[in-house]
Length: 376
Image (cartoon, rainbow, N blue to C red; front, side, top):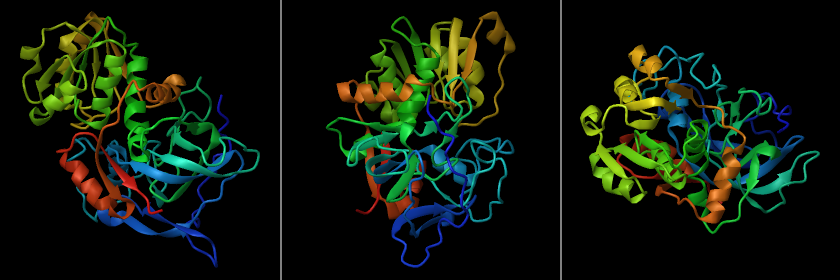
């Protein structure tokens, strides 16, 4: 069981440079609001505490969650999709806008981290200095028997910087010929996808439907579900259907088509749905008896309507997924090292260009993942 009791509370003065402190470039998110809240600046290099390691960030992936946290989308007061909350400078502070209620602004975001170990804290001697690692962003603070969790870059400082400190127990050495940028596409999207498939017990006997299959999590679901031998039906934008088919999807359906006419009712064993919105009720009608529906997002909107008769008469299981289970991240490292999955890099940006990267990310015209690279 990982010992995360030493995760330190925020020092509100930690970004103030004093005297001749060594500094690094970082993007500090000042509060809820638009791109003007992203401050690319000099801050002190963090010092690893007991049980921690200091990593030089080699590359950091871009995800929906950083944008959603900044604009406060996780608040229960928000009822629309992720694209409906404004990117302006007049957003109030939202007390329940983070993953664990209040977001600890100002702080450094960046959930995906490929890094190099450069220093140890007290009572820490692993991984070895110089090793290339990935960080498990979801940390089960009370062990894996409890669902309590903290997330790097939502609950404490993340990887949108030249250096970051993380608990040594959450750092995984990786032996792979993938580039730093390729590795940085993995943690959040693939960890989230593998966790949903793991919780749903997906296997080779399953017919699986995944919505949003061209997105970061959705494209990871396609690869990881095919690795498990499932028959995969993927829903994506029409312009991206060939790319999704190239990942191994057995059947592709253009987003916007009536799924009830494309798929026979009661024929799908597993639904992996991070789109949600108004279509959830339709998805339940497509599910077979004993089917499993898993979700870790709601980009089309968190409020939906379902027919409870579909739920209980079919003995369906609805699975909410945020906390990653114990095998998830070690599984991903193993898949990478064995060449069983492949990275999808859409574009790289310099760290200082984070606002441009997020603006382009929100257009949803890309296929694959965006990655930020800090200055050397």
